[in-house]
Image (spheres, rainbow, N blue to C red):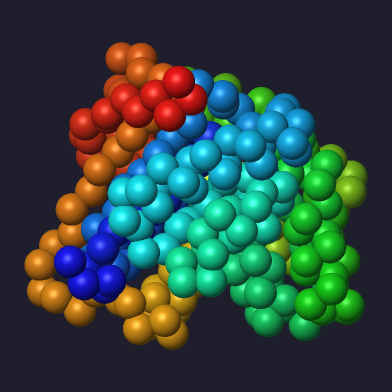
Length: 270
């Protein structure tokens, strides 16, 4: 198998990263990918950085064993704490794309000055990764971040696009620190599913930056630069692995990937 025909490896702590996988599928239909959801250890948002690095290293090794040509860390918390670890595991020949840097670049290039809001898990927000990356790239931008820990479990349970979810979202976004922001980054891969509700709160007056689409574009650019993009006319093949299987989890995957998928259990921790 040529390098360009090999799959892309994508991983997350659970199923939130399927929004990134779906965006990659839509933008790059010729590409195959292998998705790994570490459901045995979710959520990563309340785990220690050391634990996250340990999990990420083992998952990256699993994806390399599956002959993946590139690795996408489809989790903001893992991107914040384990990007360098995954790069070390992959070595110089396998590119690693995280979900933070593409969004930071996009924001710094599209907003010359002003205030940018970020919402995400406690782990992502406490790491200050968006604040540090964006303000380093563009010193005229002020980044304001708020942890929104109820949103990811709410979305996984299917509670969105209803009055309950809108009330919770409105409560988070009404915090005084977010007053007058020029754009809002959805700093969790679950959050593209509530983008419409966030737009309702802001009455579509500011840009809601969807990390899944931005990351898919970054993956396309990386594959082109490395000359490993798949140029065949055939549709890609997709495989989905999780570290702990439940039927309810399998049902929830359709919410994130927009179609029914078959999950395989891979006990890489045994």
